[in-house]
Amino acid sequence: MEERDASSSPLRSTNSPTVVLVIGMAGSGKTTFLHALSQHLSGEGRQRVYTINLDPAAVDVPYTANIDIRDTVKYKEVMKHYHLGPNGAILTSLNLFSTKFDQVLSLLETRAPNLDYVVIDTPGQIEAFNWSASGSIITETLALAFPTIVAYVVDTPRSNRPVTFMSNMLYACSVLYKIRLPFVLCFNKIDVESHSFALDWMNNPEKYRDDLHHDITYLASLSRSMSLVLEEFYRNLRAVGVSAATGAGMQAFFEALAEAKNEYNTDFVEWIRRRREGIDMEERIRVHREMGAFETHLRECI
Image 1 (cartoon, rainbow, N blue to C red):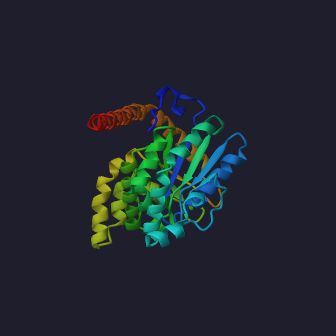
Image 2 (cartoon, rainbow, N blue to C red):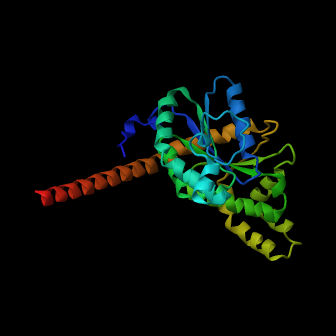
């Protein structure tokens, strides 16, 4: 690994673009949201946006991807070659792509002065990205180079029941604590149903528990208990309502995005510095080990 000079990193430049990593469950509308996001940015004229697709199984995407994993890794060929099912092929495709992600980073760093945003679409099979080694490699590589924000997209109409709402919130919480980056919760499809019920439940946990009062199932009991655990999670969470179909809520999203970027620049800089030092130390140890092995081999040959 080539050592990077922290002083020359895009993080130290006022021209550094904001990376928006769009994550969401299958059917939440995250790809459509990313399309609406890129259109909104491009429509403003002054915002220069770069799009990346990391879903190898996507048949079609509604936006023009500047970098597309499908150009590098053929999902169906991976499935056939390694005798895998659909999810295994997605995971393997991501693993193959992540081995070359340093080339993507180099391209982004070259273009960084001319970009305002980099928006990244991830697979609908959320676990293939969030819980895989390749997902961690890609996320950390981006976060060490650019201000990186997670936009977690929720299907609002499908979350209007207390138990399904809790299921979504638990997954959002797991993503936040796994990735450990500034986080914006996006309640999508507010053109179909308002997200006001979700905000009420988040701001008033007692109301949430009251709405579960008549449900005596085990799942309801578990959701009632988990609501107590998540009160602290809700307290520090940025949540906005958006519509990928109509563009509603985009202004609120960008305001939350600006807050998240400020959090990154203030709270994450020290973590980044320590992580970079750790990477540099690992590299020096590896080089020292290889040189020692080479010198031992050389002495044995003499």
